[in-house]
Length: 139
Image 1 (cartoon, rainbow, N blue to C red):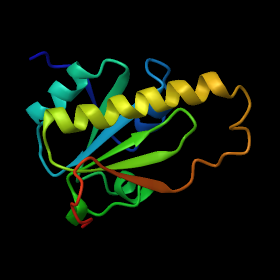
Image 2 (cartoon, rainbow, N blue to C red):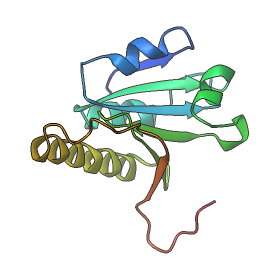
Image 3 (cartoon, one colour):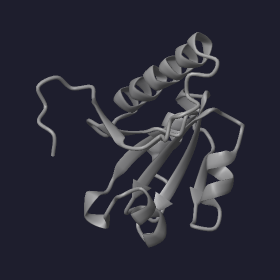
Image 4 (cartoon, rainbow, N blue to C red):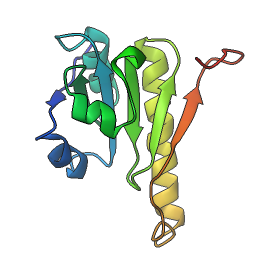
């Protein structure tokens, strides 16, 4: 399987990544690991329409900025073009995470094509939770 590029973010590089235009949808893995997990590299290779990054648990400012604590990790957070955030809830495997991100890519594309100025007042505020496993309780 193809491994894609994953950008390791720090508090000084995060804004550049988030404002980047390589891909409209961004996905960030918040992790306790000191190396990029293979599954995350494969997600980056499988979903080319998404810019993938990683934040290590030592980046306290970024954890705080996204409302996460080290005890919450690992977590994947997707940031849509309108700035809204969706937190992935589900198993840590390539297929499920890729499906989650591909669904958000399609949603973002349809939102952009159906509304040219509909997001003018959007704050991109809260998290939406997405669970691909039916009947799985949230933690």
